[in-house]
Image (cartoon, rainbow, N blue to C red; front, side, top):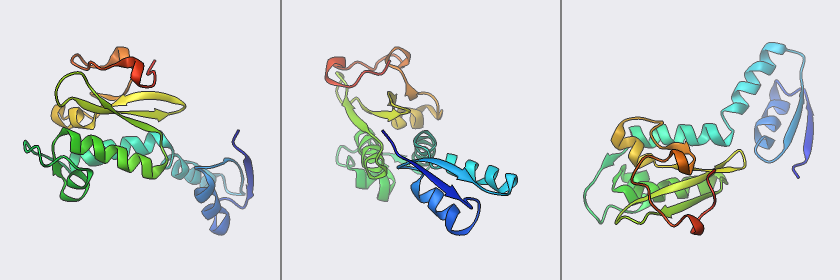
Length: 166
């Protein structure tokens, strides 16, 4: 169970800094005198939630990645630093970045040769995420945090070996 932290003066200075810093680990009870500043803070904290982070990561990688047909361009380094790679490079990049953020995720290897994507735990539920397919389709929502039944056709995998995405 997550502990709750009460922060007074949360809309400015040290209180605001503490709210931002502690928002990932704790439930927050925030107090402040300015309704407008509190609204701004809540919007800012929303930018730090896991779903928003995954949305921003999906968008960033889609817009800063060049597809490569080379089987050697398959590392997270290729996708993150060189900004080029194959499907596996992008899947590994998502895994590395989400691990660093502390967001539970799993690399899924499909039954078809070369097919891979990620499962991400957001709001205590695992969902499928395929940034590579989103990039190819030029559609951020094509395979973004979907359940197994909502996966596009062609996604076949050993469901017993992975978390449920109901």
